[in-house]
Image (cartoon, rainbow, N blue to C red; front, top):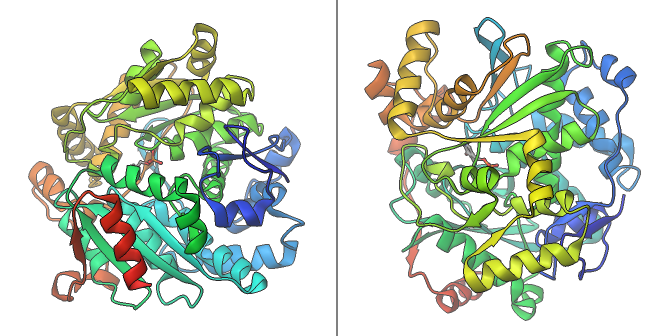
Length: 462
Ligand SMILES: *Cc1c(COP(=O)(O)O)cnc(C)c1O
């Protein structure tokens, strides 16, 4: 498979190059040249297969034979052996025809492990083969950081520098990152919000000289391989509920548009998905964009679902490329307008195309809390605030009850215990492997929101 940049001015790359590159050299994001199709017959043969088997079938067209099939199968098996549930992503029923897809059984308790555990093994495999080392720099609103650190800690081939907004991630989230004390792990608290952190990482990538000097790489959701790994659980869950004969809908709590975009890819590959609900908290840039067509950056507000406190949604650029029929010139114009004026407007026809698949909703803080309470009272399940945003949006927008509704449960409730305790009266316990998290020592540095200070820090610490 060949990969192209959404902005059309970077070289075409193969899978392994895209994996290591992250952001394209023209500032765009990489996408496969075309979507591989999976027929209804093939989807029907997935019934009863394991997560790992379906993962291989769904991802192989993007990866093999560039990576030999047998090797790729082995990497998949290794990646998911770290999960605490044999089904990897089990479905839990909430009500008649209403389901929750539990994506938080990986080592750091959020759905990001599903992609990042695989990414860690892919990185090691490819770097070893090429005899190379990389410097991974990332920004996190909370969960990417711990998942990325977990997947490369102790690696001889990668150093990782992880930026988080100081004081804006939960204690559990921060400690999951800062208590990893391996020499190749560097945690940095930035005096700013998540968008500031993300902007600095993007700026490092756009400084081509610095980028080459440290062999910079990314594991943020701009990395194609992460989006790819997330396509898998749309297939496993739809098949479990009767696809291809039965259509399904999903509700996805959304920040950077990576997870829900993976659902769009599943649909393009042939999975019968009715609707993808884009559930945002009060940081609602995506709801505003997908309703009125205007992508306009606002001020980020801290919420009880901090992993979605985002106003610049990086992966949205990939959807733009698709709804503009692969016209990189149009994407460049929109991105230039974003840079110059802080906004752009999607064309009417393109917006209609997006709306035929996506329905976006904004969920308030009160609604999020009420949903935690409702689900607990009616099922006994404690859910985290991100999951609650998704379930609230799903219930508000579920028009045809004969179509199963699957809400993605993106984090374990113990990751965000305050809101869960407040609404259920129960303090959600951390799983055994993390029970001593609050006794472990922390290691991190604080830096101003300043690019030169960050560059110096990276060079000093490599
Ligand atoms: C990252 C994250 C999200 C948002 O996912 P995107 O791919 O950025 O849209 C939602 N919930 C949780 C718990 C997360 O960690």
